Image (tube, rainbow, N blue to C red; front, top):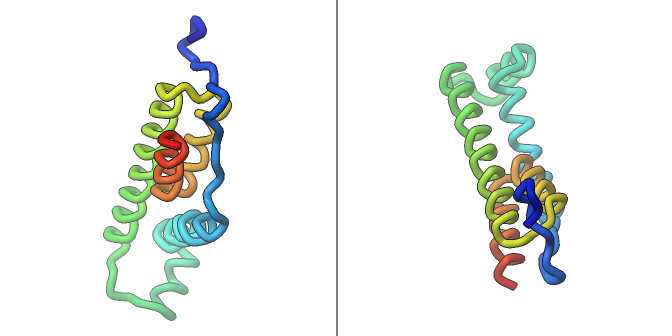
Length: 115
């Protein structure tokens, strides 16, 4: 370990990208959810064309909780990667991917770490 606490990567530990379908489904879903919950023009369109049964409070709270879940997962991935011996760069990559994609990245990290 260096003085700053960053771990040096072992030869077998590497960052692994999740499949593109997860980027489309999870990141795309979060962007869509955020727009519906927070952008008034998109919210109005959603209410007219999809459903007007869910209150704006429920939409905003749901989006905030989903975003918070991604942040918590990302922090876990970064810390666990650093503890497992991943380089600082790869730990940050696990963090970024997990922040944007969520649980598929955590699963990929766990598989990569145990391989």
